[in-house]
Image (cartoon, one colour):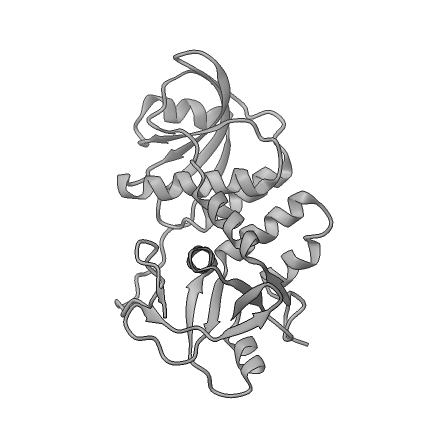
Length: 261
């Protein structure tokens, strides 16, 4: 029996609760999907195979190369794309997505409106971020496990973008209070990606998490020592040894999604 993938596991749970359904969409956005093509890619242009279904057409994508090969039963051209990029492109072009059809427990068809919802959710405004202006900090209190797991997973996948993060409650200098995630040792160019990762963790946790601010701190900032003493720490992995530069495949640059033809 083929080993279950993360998408298989998320799909098996998705009908148990609204939170589990959100977690499936989070897994879909993060997955690398192999899109079945009619021919090899040409530059940024790709030509997916289209299949008719009730109400429109779908493209087919699989979360492993082996599953694509099992479905195609022959050597077939494909391109690997992040799920979030594929959802964006299909939303713009008006196609649905056939996921792992006939070859996995997660076999399903996602209609166009589901992909449009996912794209809109991923594009939603993230949490406020910047240098912290906090007057007091204290422990995070009772935070739902599902949110802690989501934050841990997102920060773990952000290897090399910062040193660590600390979750705490805080009073803000301009008034009010709430939870804040202090991210320590980040580079300025990585901060938008980190803020977006935190925003997605909150969104896809499926809870009424309230407001979560993100503060970016240097290790030498006076607040760093204070918040580290009382908060909950999340270690961010160190970057792996860089591999030799490879040509970028179509769709791997979020700023340049592939063009369907």
